[in-house]
Length: 142
Image (cartoon, rainbow, N blue to C red; front, side):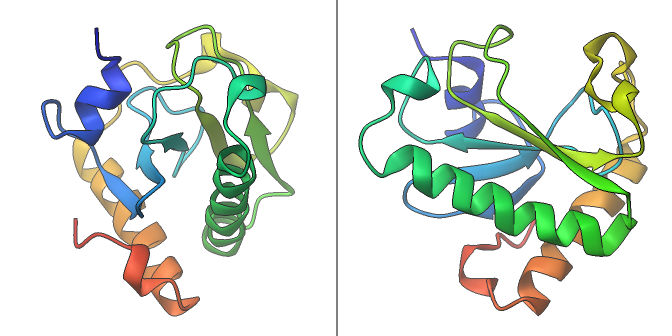
């Protein structure tokens, strides 16, 4: 059975995509821990990061770093958070979001009903930053 992330990747469930290449995608979390919270997800369903085929985890982390750099440039947080939790969905995904303190790592503080217009603005800002950084070929139009 396909994971919720595979359903998002396949367009069965809507997502705010900011990155798309042949191996991974990046889209905004529906329960963000901060503005511009992106999930970087391999297209291939891999349950745990340690089970990722050679090169896939490294590529996923490279995209996470690229997205994280843009998040830092857009929101200027003291840190950009990066987490692999893996309990919510059995499909490898990397959380990348701005962090102003340790509370940014507490999933009980995640937004449960974020403003759709604000989410659209966050996705637009990240896509623009990725294009400006020379990654336009991996940036979907919306």
